[in-house]
Image (tube, rainbow, N blue to C red; front, top):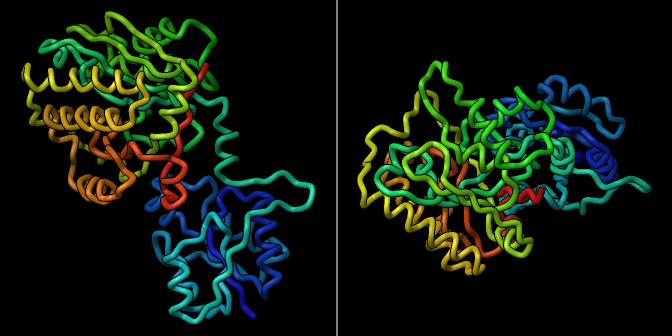
Length: 389
């Protein structure tokens, strides 16, 4: 009896070994492994271990009869392997189960078995996601801009002053480059403090980061907006008021646990392609007083809705802020982005959406009815943890 399982197995851990043990009880176990190219294309990140090394490790496990690098792509990359192997059973754990996999097995006469994720006796439950979070627990935070951003550039705020709203996020997920989550600022921070931010006044820390990143001899002549440094360095929910200067006139912080939990319950990220090389999101910009005031008004409305924990008003203001952004900077919507917007906006539990940062690619940041419920049926969705201190 041939039994087949499939996965990436990049951070090989005891949970994988126990899964292999359980699956091998159903017959001779064969393992399909996601290729480097598939993982890069599907998950938008490079593997920690190259495919040949992962193949070596999996083959060395005593419960495994043989293992192969899957020749397909995407979430169904195992199809060519299955067609060559002709297994009798396909075993998945509950996290990796999907209707698409079940239908495929049904169509090909393969028994589909779903196992609960359980640790070996006496061991702590392990998952790749948990390990990544542990590795990142002392990492540099990132930030998500909620509303009003672009106002931190003086060439925007000269038309009308206003607030930018950000949240500082624990980097308990892989923060991909060129995806709107301030990776350029985080990389500059790592030059100063490679492991963690120093324990000092957050506003002073943000100003130090801003001045370091925008040193006078910077070759490209581009000044990064202060919302990046402030959003990373100031914990919790934060808004900062810009009026024709690079640094805000005032900063207001919210660390109310009730409000932060409410935000976490209604926000998540879904990955799309990274911003492409050579992409300029400022080409064709439409700067005028009316367009900028739409941005500042939406930010005011967004803050007020958050303070009241009013989900419908928050979604309306969040959407209005993004619409104002792309009115000012239409090139934020690069070719291919609209496909993802159309896909997620059609879902009834998605209330609003935007692109983080300057757009062009990266992620969609969604406002949803309930983040935990949404993630049960959308494994690609990333939960957000707002930094408390």
